Amino acid sequence: MGFLHESLPAPYNGFTQWVGFGGEGTIASNDREEQRKIIKYNHLVANCVIFHNVFSLSRVLRDLEREGYPLNTAEIASLSPYLRPHLNRFGSYELDMGTLPPELIYDIWG
Image (cartoon, rainbow, N blue to C red; front, side, top):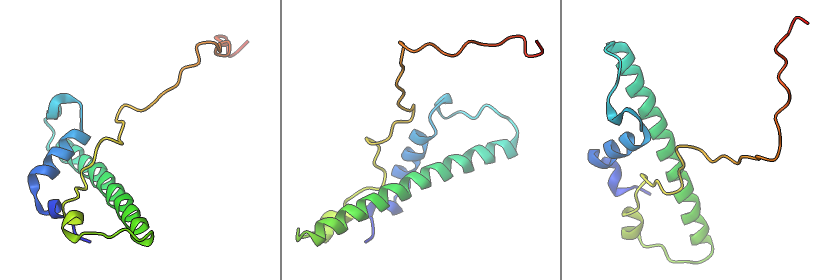
């Protein structure tokens, strides 16, 4: 199964910018090697998310096909690997304000 959008650079670039949030797209370092490293890491993370999305979509489509749902090639081709709603870039944290942390021991030699 191919995806119509994977050959279009604009959606990919928009997705990588969304994945690499912070700094509004500005790389703070003037070191060329550091800039290249930041860009490569951003592309690596974006590609991993795209792979996860394609894997998940493929699994769902396979399951639908096994259940007897007709799959339309044109509709499948219109699916995008740049899905974001299921991603939480900032994490999800639960705070238990009723539990106190253990006491800090400041004198480690005592």
